[in-house]
Amino acid sequence: MKLSLKDQSRILNISEVKVLENIGEGILIIDDTFRITYFNSKAVSLTGIPRKEAVGKPCYEILALSNCTEGCPVQKMVEQGESIVDYRSFIKSPDRAAVPVEVRFSILRDRQNHFSGGIITVRDLPSKYNNELEGDHQIYSFQGIYANNKRSLEIFEILPDLSRSDASVLLQGESGTGKELFAAAIHNLSYRKNNPFIIVNCAALPENLLESELFGYIKGAFTDAKQNKPGRFQLAHQGTLFLDEVGDIPLSLQAKLLRVVEEKSFTPLGGTNVVKVDVRIISASNRDLEQMVTVGTFRRDLYYRLNVVKLEIPPLRERPEDIPILIKHFINQFNKKTFRNIEGVSTNYLEVLKNYKFPGNVRELENIIEHAFVMCRGNTIRRNHLPSYLSRTPQNQENPMGSVERLFNQMEKETILKVLAKHKGNRSTAADELGMHRTTLWRKLRRIELNS
Image (cartoon, rainbow, N blue to C red; front, side, top):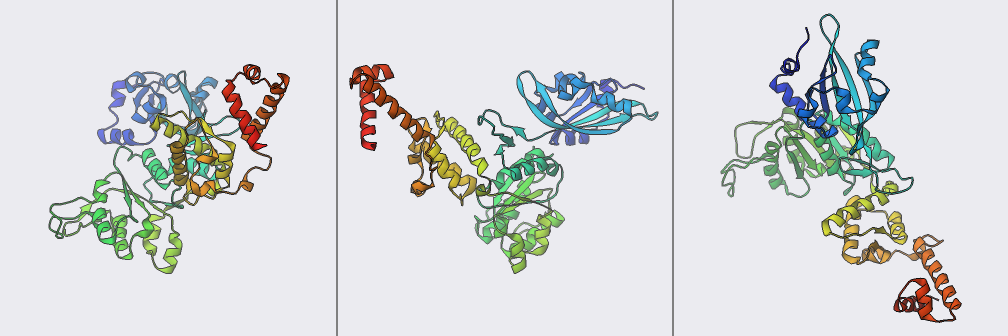
């Protein structure tokens, strides 16, 4: 029996619809004529097509996958008797850039084993970030993170799979590498994305305050407890709790944290009632937790509970190929923030940053670019706009063949002197031929004289 679109939509109950709406992947359900009967919110964002316009239309018309032009993948599956097929493709749109996606087709059959429809799952993949740099540079962005480094791109690839689970994740990396961005990406790709993403910096609070921040307290628990206060675990209910610098949690508090991780419950300070929570935990540390376990400053059982999946975030000094990409990204950000129009950086400036070890990683680079925006009055950030601790870098660290800027100055000098000689030293006629004001020519000649 063939079901109408209205009848097929009723197959999903309210709880199932809620799950599908919150999942971090596009979900389409089609009938036996390939028409869409269900289209979740993620599918809307991936395609840019409103739900009302998508439901009832053929899937190939809405998804517009690059593979659809080679013949319908679902039709091929039906003919070949396959149940599930995975492949990568692009969602094409006339007014939007092609979106790289991974697609899974799952065939639905009735009791007589006849094709009755299917489920199409679509998830976005790391995409090339066009117009950032010219030439052969390949730039990838994913959830607001920019990279070209191989290790970073490997993390991009596994983030969607990791986000679909509820496994605890440990982000290991130096301070300033962007661990919070990766944690937010995992949350935003998960089915919890519409629920809270709560951040706790465990290194910023003393032990007594950290406990009350995590677990909350009951009115009268201590002198200043004038009313009940929910902890971060309660605030993150049905969402994600990000424990930044988890290695700084004191041993005495680690046992209580372990109980929450294991039992999903805790007792607020001064309370007697157990509070149940549904929270995914992502933790991060710039310290070697495994070494801390060895010396006894971090609980082994807690470490293994938090370290179900570990992601090692590489420091900036190990991915110098990302420095030009990040510089351009931060310039774009600060241009919008300050209503400036800085176009880029000089070769000298870039060479200094490429040779710098960046103990503060990406956060330090962002601060360096912000400093340049304060100091720079033109459209190009130059070496003299570096912070003082970087501007003292020895000159011999520069390219021995000279920068592009120096080469340009040399060419300009030769041209000016040649034109001046042609007009027998007449600055007015030389300036006219050079297309500059006479005073500008005078300043350039003065600079040439000083540098000779």
